[in-house]
Image 1 (cartoon, rainbow, N blue to C red):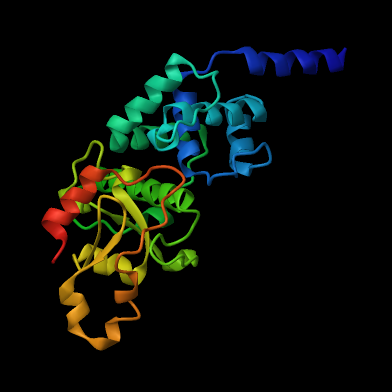
Image 2: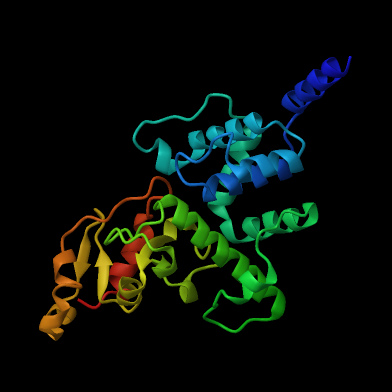
Length: 265
């Protein structure tokens, strides 16, 4: 009798419809789990399954469904699982159009359910370029935290210029700068980012390095001529193609902006 009850309970978990909130939580998780780590043994998948009262396998499959709506995945003709729902597509498209507000909304859902990972200490360690009122500052810190986690996962914790894999030395670098990005689909958008080591992050931010529309590194002549000592740090990178992420490939519109307004030729 007990075994039959447990079987019915598991069946109910599998059959009940996903809500919008549950789908949002699953999509955010899809964004921050590295490629190949979305298995039934992943602790974050297990935790989410427990919180929303679903099987671990159903959460894992939901993450697989999102690939069908991810431009970075479908660009080369790949497809995700064919069980995606209209709600899956709606949630994916909503995030692609308005990352900032939806990441903040998802964090509020997580806090309400008791699974928010971003505590006050982590928020306070994230620097925001502009002084803001308290509520806006909190929202932007949450966005920055997600932005970093998404890029770490997409680039497999490696600098896309050099391959450096020491997490503490990696920076989630905005292509179109944070200060001039809008609050809808630019500041928190992973496709407006590169994962760079600290040195090249600063050089990219200051316009001494950019990338071309075919994702090759361009080093400013000013930097090349500045000092012979720069050669081993910068010159050898010139013309090299960056390591592309497994999802969230940099959007060309952001690269064009950096080329035109930030880069010092």
